[in-house]
Image 1 (cartoon, rainbow, N blue to C red):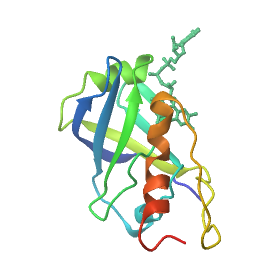
Image 2: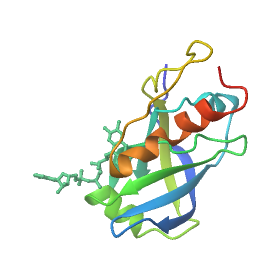
Image 3: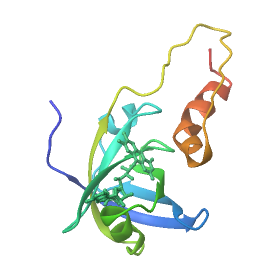
Length: 136
Ligand SMILES: Cc1cc2nc3c(=O)[nH]c(=O)nc-3n(C[C@H](O)[C@H](O)[C@H](O)COP(=O)(O)OP(=O)(O)OC[C@H]3O[C@@H](n4cnc5c(N)ncnc54)[C@H](O)[C@@H]3O)c2cc1C
């Protein structure tokens, strides 16, 4: 069962990608083995304390240090508050959620990824997996 209590998450850094979108790098305060099991296409709930939470998709899933990234488009309450945060800010995290993109494709499969605009970002880790030397 998934624990509904947010975990501590640090905002490590961010950089702009267009007027209203930013790449954010986060780091889980106390990463554990289960964090490494995140699959491309899954999403997490990001909590900005005192404001609220919203779902975002991993662009790069958590590494062994708990560091991961997401591309966020500024839309409303939560994303306005996130864009106002400086590196080092303490946030909340719940996840992962969802089933992710199809995986375990038969050997030799050819993959066609179709996306528009910043919708490409959540496909990044799936494309990287499909291009890895040990991919099927
Ligand atoms: C599974 C999933 C994955 C996602 N992944 C990403 C991702 O990787 N990157 C990303 O940028 N986004 C992603 N999203 C979308 C993101 O979660 C939303 O943009 C989220 O609502 C932003 O929260 P917010 O509080 O900033 O905006 P909100 O305040 O919730 O506003 C969102 C929109 O609703 C409008 N709105 C707000 N209140 C009202 C109202 N009372 N009446 C009418 N309209 C209103 C706002 O004007 C705005 O257009 C994902 C969503 C889902 C479901």
